[in-house]
Length: 195
Image (cartoon, rainbow, N blue to C red; front, side, top):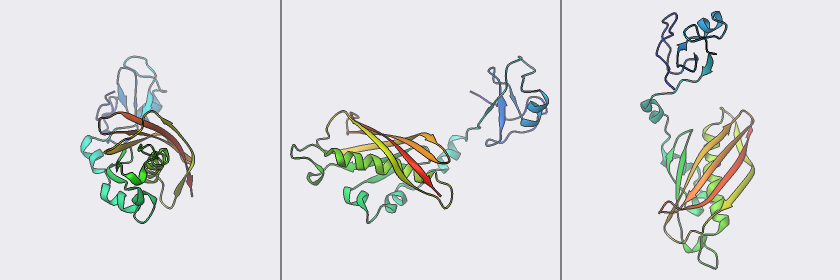
C-alpha cells in the first residue's frame, strides 16, 4: 500500500512516522482532515483507516543493533556455553548461528532437542528484550517446539520474528534450519513483560 507524502486535502506534509489515514484506493489524509470528513474519503466514498507509516530501508537499516553487542549480552551464561552467535539483530528480526559439536548431541549423534530449544528460546527472548520499554525486563512464560528433523553436523541457524508485541506479553516464532535450509524445528514462545 502506498501513502502519499502530503495530505491530499490540505497538502500538509506527512512525515514517515506521522499518523495518516488511507482508503482502499490509497487516497491519503492527515488526522485533522479525516476528522472533518467524518472518516469518509471525499474522492471515492471509501472508509478512511489509520495506517502506520513505514520507515525507508535506510532508516530501518539504521535501527539495526550490532550483532556482536547482542552476542556479548549473553557472555558468561548458557548461550555462551552453547556457542550461540548473533549475526543479524533488529527489533523485527534476529538471526543467530550455532555450530553442532559432540557436547551438544545425543547418544545417536544428532543435535539434542534441548539444545535446539535453548537456542530458539535465547533468540526469541532476545528479540523480546530488544522491544522492551525502558526499565522493563522479560522472561519466558510459555514455549512450544515442533521438531521436524535432527541436526547432524555443521552450523544451524535460528531466525526469530514477532507474532505479537503487546504491552504485557510478546509472542515470538523462531525457525531453526540447517546449512541446506532444511527446517529442523519451529518454536513459538510467549514472553511476559516485567516492569
